[in-house]
Image (tube, rainbow, N blue to C red; front, side, top):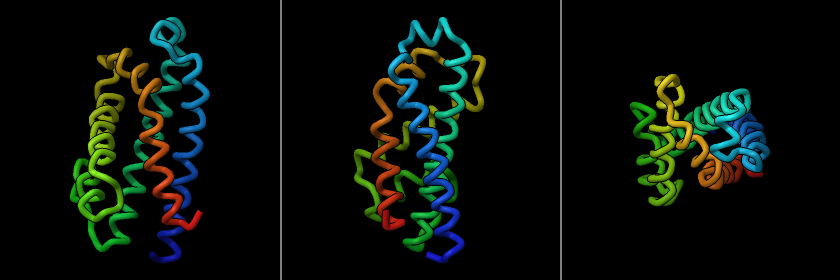
Length: 141
């Protein structure tokens, strides 16, 4: 990996780490009822999910490039990471669901299912953390 690519990867890892830390803080109060009653928190959680997931897909592309592979679209990144042995098949499936969730956050904001946001906040942060740890290992951290 070139020095420039390492710097870019490190920047994306830092962005994702910050977003994940915020999401972990929100998890303690992020019940569905709380998110519905506190729209500012709800929108902050949505934004931090977008930040984390976008960073992970950028990270995935850097990790694929290191293997000599390149995804044609973000949708392909989880499958290719598993095929290249960077992540496990189960983690690839979890990562792929993040793609759809991210699309809902970005493109269907007005029709977003707040229960899905609360569910991701309660149950899916470990998936983000697992992917982030793989990226950190590739940087030697």
